[in-house]
Length: 113
Length: 114
Image 1: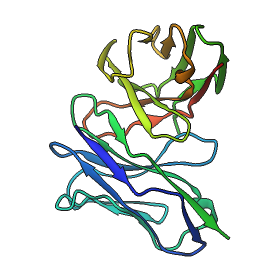
Image 2: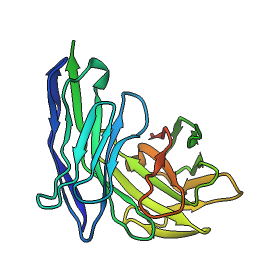
Image 3: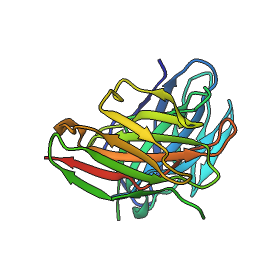
Image 4: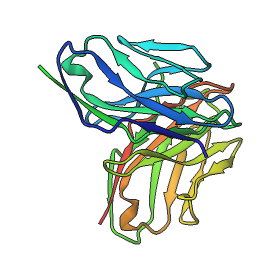
């Protein structure tokens, strides 16, 4: 079945460091790919998405490129801030009739000032 | 900006009791979902709902679970006889029609079964 694998956390970085959180997926067909973020004590927010190969999703300085050849969707940010501390979930939506979302296990990111 | 709302934010119940978790999806959305997240674990799909019926459900969604859209605005998840392992954060989500549209998640209800 479809699945998402992302790097284990926690990831601890200093402010202004470069961030990469790796994500790979297994899917039949051509899923849409997402990164969701969960700030402490809050729900899930869509951070960015990409719906087809080579698309780049971007938001708030974060980027991820849909790589079909490597089945990857790695999240990157050039200079992280303390406010980026959160749990990040890579996810895919199998494009069936209802597009249920399948999540990775999440990566906790902790940014030190 | 419209958003998905959920009530209550935190529900504590005793094992064996029935609970109803409530969600108000965004008004023009047609697809509705429930997910759960056991503490420290990944978010798992429970059920999807469209056109007043269940479209798909996971193996987690057994006979103890049911969903309903009792009126034009609410979408509920009922657990008939709660177990300790039902303790989790439950997220409601909705999305508009059309393929590829992202789902909008509510803030979640934390269910604690004692």
